[in-house]
Length: 271
Ligand SMILES: [Zn+2]
Ligand SMILES: [Zn+2]
Image (cartoon, rainbow, N blue to C red; front, top):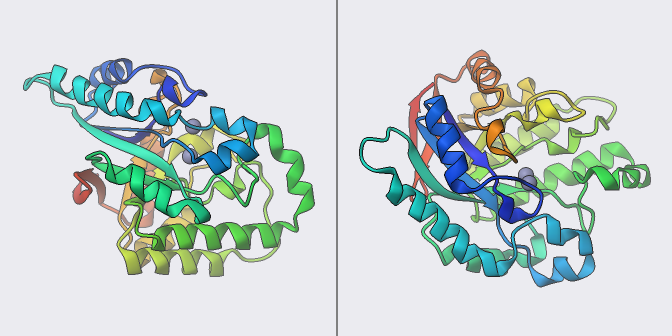
């Protein structure tokens, strides 16, 4: 079992320390655990939105987070079968790519997840901001969201795109076929070699399904896009959440391996 997407209390909306995550992962027999807390957000975002202080860890804590993961890795000892990765989940913010690149270059991350959580100044996945869906034509919102994910994949900042169809979280689905959007995203990922994750958090949200939906996962498989698995745990008890369902979806889509990372290099392991 692998889990390449978990968060700690440092981000302000999750629970648990790295040591607690490692303890749970070890007791479940995980082979790989990727710590991927939220990368600090830039001043421009923090200034325009007071809520953003609870979306990611403060910039001052990034060094402590890295040290916490490194210390946990050192404390593991050789007998432990768990491989612990120093990862991070970074927001794709079109106007702040240099800020993001700068922070990411500061530490020896094993894996960087890239996520689109914001459209302009709107954190569309925040349950307290769902009234803003009424301002949108949902088809145009989906177009805009997929354009952002494609741009994020092409930015060169990320190894894996996180929860690639997050826009479905609150069940605002457009009319008509989603296929064209799916194909454009699969093409961008093939062009760039960026992987995707099967993220089980969707099962815990109103959309009640995996990110990505099975037809999108099949499109990725057809295009040769590597896939990993993440629970997006925001508390240690969610480590490995829904792993079997994620593995079943991957097999149904035709995958027989999953991607893991070390020093930002991808390797495939048997599913
Ligand atoms: Zn989070
Ligand atoms: Zn996320």
